Length: 259
Image 1 (cartoon, rainbow, N blue to C red):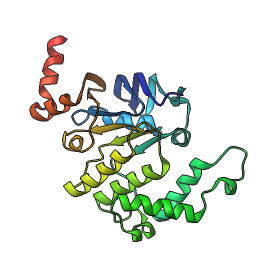
Image 2 (cartoon, one colour):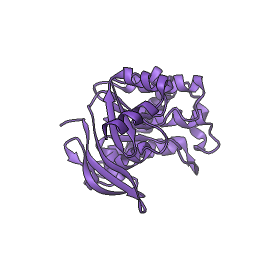
Image 3 (cartoon, one colour):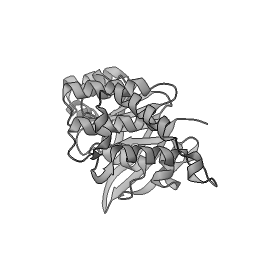
């Protein structure tokens, strides 16, 4: 079974506005692949559609993961299959503690069809051990787990919690939507180190960002440029450095010259 994430001629809109206009992209399992592009290019839309956000309508194309067309699956089914989305702006859930949320998410992934959920639920002691280990690697205080989910969290705390979820759920493919947004340099380093510990043969990552800054810490093997709802250029890590030095106008000029 392949852990590749394969996107073919994907078209999508929100309401009447077309956003994706034929995206073709392959993220190989076990690799880190960056998608860069200016504001409004469709990067976050692509991330949300992969995860199954109901506000977007897919009007054409396919997305395959583990040899399945995931467009036929609900968001929770995609998650259990091994897809994980780290949100750009994680939402707050008052009244739900971090610990209860994480244990419920982990148990949902462990649940097996036809079995009593109590039979597959992770034992409390085992969960606490996993939680402490994950938090230690992200330099998080244990009191953090008693707080309500993302309520009053700083940008860095929200993003560390996203990586903590990833650590516990162990997805086959993580989609990281502008994880560097709102992070100072110390939080960025800690979050990136958490991703680097997980990335490897068992987990690939699609890293969506505007800037090279994040890619100084999370090293991609491949870089794609997205503009106007399409992938318009692909290359290796040097492409990200070129974009950092020259901006995106030169890519637009190349596209205009080729038209």
